[in-house]
Length: 555
Length: 83
Image (cartoon, rainbow over all chains, first blue to last red; front, side, top):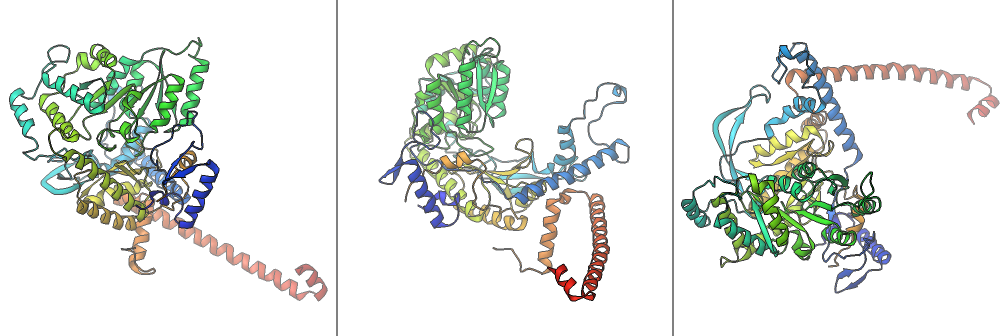
């Protein structure tokens, strides 16, 4: 197998060997049967070695790209001010929300920069988001055709549907979002037996035997003592973190955590400190400061220190450095909350998430959380761990007490998907799906690297962000891909830093090689036309990440 | 690379123009905004060229006069100045 890291340290073969030799000499690594072992260069104190290579790319684009991005934003801002001026002075019709005449002496509601951005920049390319689909979000789907007559203020549907658009945006990692009658047989049976609604919360009359069965299955799947399921993935995070931590506790949260984690952390009332994305030195420094100085004014010890991380970060495609975090947490006696929304089912040899990917035991992690939305084609979330933890959540979680429980057909869909993954339905289809996803991910990423695009993230993550940088290219990219019958998700500010807008691809096990090739050819052409191939295989923007990722297997 | 034409053909110039449009976000503008933007750009460009023309012409002529004055002087003086 070609060494995948050759792309990230220079495109000359001899340069790569030279660097590797230097590294081996510097680290004092010994090689045995091609497997490198030894202490990591930037030394986490317990020195847990990674059992396989951990290669992440965060390449920085050439300087002219940043300059052009700012030029684009500057022109957009100037025209934004011009249009706002014209709207304020009545030279142009006002379509936006404005205050009524009776409110003119009140404090103004609509004047911050975020609104400026929405009105003047987001609105011009708004037709690339919120596109309604009218079929199952499998590897291909149907879109409703939508046109605008007044530059994206209003839309109207023409009535036609665009058929068989290749789906590169849905979180359908294992391809369980399917309408095959044979696959959905048990779901149909349960639908006819239970109906659709539960009409109660878990604590009242909403706990069905299906939920008990599902929770036992989730616990077996993950290898933990017990699990609890909730109806909504976002609510799982935001409603359960307040139940676990409160005032006087410390939350150490990754820079790029999802909104649900941030909301849950803020709702809990604990003190929140942010560490740099996937940066273990930053985390260790925060832990040491927390233990040495204690709470802000009283200097008492923190009641609890909890670290919030995700398995795969959906905007970067990076995988958490779990072995190092676990060793840190064991040393400094903190708790770990792992949100595996994107990684459960998508990574790991049998699809059991990042815990299996790193070869660790689920006992190392205190709270395992995940969602069923991404890899299982259903909806909802779970929290798993020790029996004491789950029993506590059953009584104290807001979601358990007040939120409606998961509906039975959805629970059955998760049960059948999990049984398929574990092989309990008698076939090897589950394992085949995991393998297919892995193959597709590697193929897609390798090809994109070869073509010269800048891709972020770990080589094994099925989330592939392709950097676009300039605001003008966001709209052009999405529209032209749709013309070629490929549906992509593009992301800009405020979900990403303002200069790093990107297109995010989600590879699925249901994608065939032909579909991926179609997408790759379209990307090749579009990359030439829009001049998106910025990669120079140069040193990345995060030097410590780059250095640590240089332990490679010799082929 | 596929799709890239030989330089100095009309399609290459069109491609360059497309890049300009994308970088400066004029791809996203409504037609009247584009007219405004391009006319402003062309006006600035014209001003720049005129300034360059005036400046360079003046500078070149004054430099030429200086050179002529050097060559007109006795040889010793000229050598010491030229060194």
